[in-house]
Length: 639
Image (cartoon, rainbow, N blue to C red; front, side, top):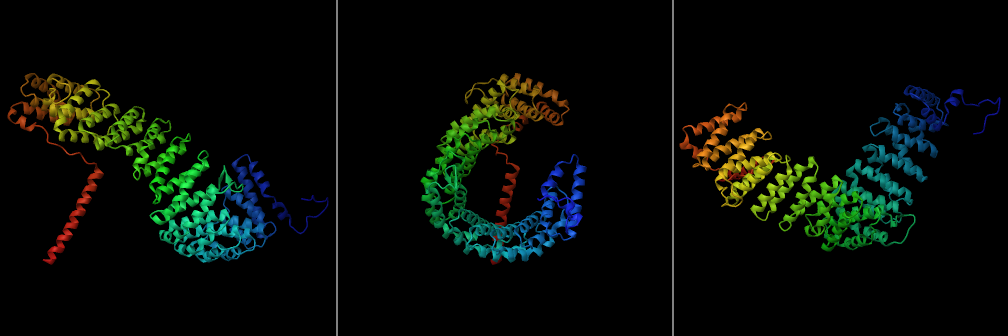
């Protein structure tokens, strides 16, 4: 700026206009210089007053500068709604600097709920066809960001026309604007289906990228457009092939790969178009194989393309060899040092394992190694995948790995891991004895992190399997005898229940180490007096004691010890324990004739259903009964 000569008058502008004409950078400097919040408010209020004065005086020369300062004030959180009309005046101007600030203010100070927005529709329509490409781009950007549903619907034909414009910059902006218009007006999707071929035939990568994005959004908003858009698959394959096989292009090269953003967009679009279509999938097989084999995986850019390629191969009707290649790529990802890539690989394998189990099984050892990683999210994903990989042939080795992981898993995840192990064992155990041994070992190692459902499942298995009842009871007796203090209460309750039910099978003839009656009663007495035993566990013990009096009916010593152990609880402060003890004491006093019948062995029990399972079964039964009653009513009417 030329300095004013001494004694020279300011000119036609008033003193107030000159005083408020500080630049945006000066306002920012003044705000940053404020020491307190009060100083900042005073500075902002002073500047707002000056801006209002300039607006009232219709100072067109400095309007864009004042609106720019108003945007900064808005960013600081101060009210600026009083300056919205000035944005409309700038948009209606003829100069590019004014329109640029006007459209920026329009997008920041207004939203589609503002009533004054309808006043700008005519300016938007005129600027969409402006000779200056950047002004047309500003109009499309504003239309996409703040236009209402009605304005989008009115100006959609203009945007459709711009998709065929000769300027690639305008075509690119038109594609981006069309995406936002279709999100607000999904019913307009069919109007753009015929415009796509002209976009995909472009040589400009920016236009191709936005065109792929436009097609993808169209398929998301209206799945019925997938079928007509499938005729563009050969064009997409050709573009992708040119990208993969092209030489070095400095304007599009990123870490040695030509335009990875466009490659990823095309792969995502091919995934949608090829899903459920064998014909389109056949067209893609060759290029997908080339992408999978020619893309460098040492850089993160290449890994991004390979990941999208894998997802596309898995989603479409690809050849079996191509699917194996995709899963092998994920296997390479698992050996990457970047935990993010390894997590992505595990997450994808979880999704595809059911479709190609054998190919995933080849990477089982690598997946198991992820359980030893320090990253907890990796361990969680690996655990989820391992539980899916378990089958009849590898259950013993895989469960061994899970049991080795159990002692080091975090406390908050231990119960979930125990449940998963027991679920896998229940489904794929080679025999009942191995199943019982593994579940007992799991419950012994898990401590207090055991759900009640596991107890119900184990009791159901034992009661239905007479051939392992004696063996299981002996194993549980040994487990509780070795470490009662650290044993889970669920395991203690199952062990006590088995001792009460099958104490007469502990002589060693049914498998397992022989246990004498005295040893069986000693264990029950220890559990009853243990400070770690819960009230429910003591209730189990009282039941088991009185049942042992029938199992060892001819043993006077056992009868006496049972009476002695039950008697103190007839005056217990716990009502349930007191009631049980009194009733059992009554069975000993003059009710010997019916005691054996009352305390006979329990029949085979069904596994207790979870509440949600029971509700689902009830709904299914109700639906079946309603169907039958409906059919019966029709038959009755006919009769």
